[in-house]
Amino acid sequence: MKKFLLVGLMFSVMTQLGAQNKEDILRNLENPDTLKQQSAKTFSDNQPMVIVRKVLKVVDGDSIIEERIDTITSVNAVTVDSDNMAWVNTMGDTIKAAKGDTVVVRLGKKKMVIVDSKDKTIIEIPEKGKKSDDIIEYKEVKKFKGHWSGFELGINGFMDKNQSMTQTGNIAWMDLKQARSWNTNINFTQYSIGFGTDKAGLVTGLGLEFNDYHFSNPITLKVENGVTVADSSYIQAGYRVEKTKITMSHLTLPLLLEFQLPMGDKRKDRIYISAGVIGGVRLGSHTKVVYDDGSRHKNKNRNDFNIATLRYGFTARMGYMGIRLFANYYPVQLFEKGKGPVLYPFSVGLVLVPFD
Image (cartoon, rainbow, N blue to C red; front, side):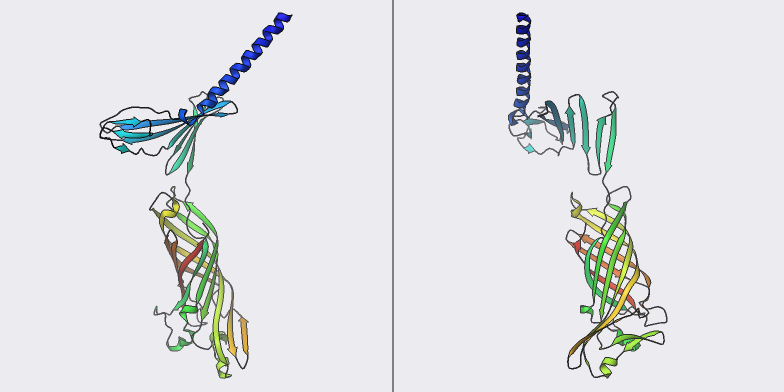
């Protein structure tokens, strides 16, 4: 009986020593000096060269091998400088290898291959229950992302039927202080639909557009006999008009065709150009007059003033890195047909805060 106990004890000690020795070997392989394994091959005649770097790690007692494959082409014979981890040709020049784009991960008998390219990432792994050489391929296509959402600031204006931005004649009372007529857009929702690439597609979304039109003349607006006309009652009363404007807001819906031109590896390094149509529904409108009759007063009048409820227009956008521009033009009259002066709104400006 004692002999059996002694044999069992010896077997247990040997097993523990063997396991400890195996773990020590694996951990020793984690030393940076042991990680630099590469194929010291020499090629010539402009043939591609391959270098493989392997890393062995210990994860819960298992070993993982990662292989990164670099390729290089040279007219002259090329060898590996193992000390500096570089390619050297026969002329003594150091050649930079192309960045590896393939990683092989092995966990025991399991293997996973990850191939990363500019257009997609392919992941190949064995399917459970099948042979080790049977793989399933997963493809991740890079998605197209357009440019619509953001905070925009610009200036408003009107064009008359002669495409003039200065109102004269019988509509001179609608002339604007252009520098104080602001356009503010908050484009809060965006959807992008790619054409099978991340560089072209359709863009839509939702936004809020706010338009302030400051009048050059000391008048405001009123509806008389169903028609929007000038209201000069403040001047007739002898008041000093400091500021007079009309403000309106719209919910906007765009449909843009966008193209992106790569100028670098990252998305922010692309030039984008887009154009399309933009629709709008009026949410509200009001006039505001600030006047002085001995004391300062503000008067707001909320009314639709015969402003068109629905409108559509054309929009164009372009940008590169931090500089982004937009322009909108509405061929639909500002006022309903026959109920006000014939004017067509436009706006141009900058995207100050993109939301992408």
